[in-house]
Image 1: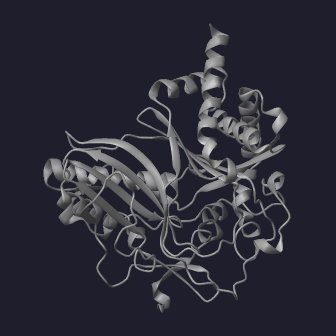
Image 2: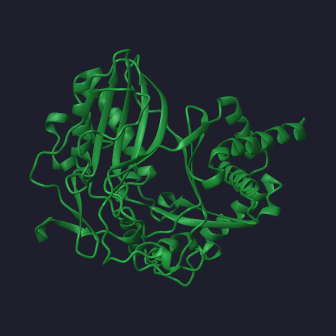
Image 3: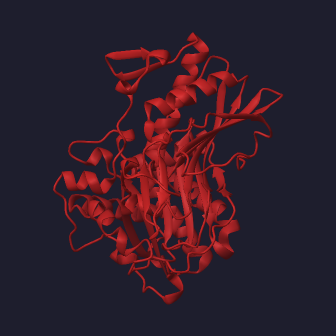
Length: 439
């Protein structure tokens, strides 16, 4: 694909580059009860594209497979896709999802019984979890405005409101920037520690993929994590346990994951790597939509024999994170990404447990009579190729929506089928133990 120099915004940084090889789109999807207005979603998605022009930018690769962010092309942006189907499925859209055309797509699936599914796909190089949730919330806000008033109000800031027909470039957000750029602006340079030392393994020849091989891309692949949802009562008990022991929910869930995995796999030593959103921890803080992937990585390793007391493990996880944040190590991790991801990497963290906790997902605005009763995270690879990054033994996704704690799983090998129930059992045991201790 050819492009002109004036089309180039910038070469993507390592925190963004690692999602280029597979053309990874992260999807936010909800099932809906009630009648949807197809025209309303068309208007809402168009408004979102105008407000956030990064969504109609493009990503191409040069001869060295470096991802390059380009400005929007001359062709009209792809609008919302609306069709009939099964809302219980998250599908691969029939239409092409090409990062060389644009970086976000909206798929709306309708059913005759007033049920639907709405999925927003955004390229992971330009949007992480916090950014995607902000975009999804804006989309539903625009849709609600359209249904309730017949027009969409696009707010440039708290004091300025323009209608959809009046919206122009003056209200468009600037392109979000990388974490590396934000760290450089704050004078933070690469130091000796990455913070991932405890999970580093030797890099073997089998882990390496040569650029010269340049294998053909595989067909489009959609990954929908297996998941288990705690009901609101069980979720409240987990929160109660965390509060009673002054530990975080993330720490408690991570401890349960480590214990469950070590028990099922028979592993003597378990390690986890998890992202830490740095938006509110930077000075000054950064808005959700102002950055692309603004998470550093934290690591925690423990002997399996030391995971018997979940609260104690959660406390150790919290202390480790607190110390790494205080020492500036979390910010350092991203500056060491070239050592861990891509064809030039020199380290491996293969075999670790990856855990992403996106926290509580806020309820989305919706017109009266419409119920958004479920929420999940999916991933779509538009042109997957052999990976040049560390392979996790298992990946967990954790979030809370409508008072229900959800734990999703990708991978897990021979113990995959048992993992989610084991984690839920660990959390249930922890909650029951806490209630008995405080009775």
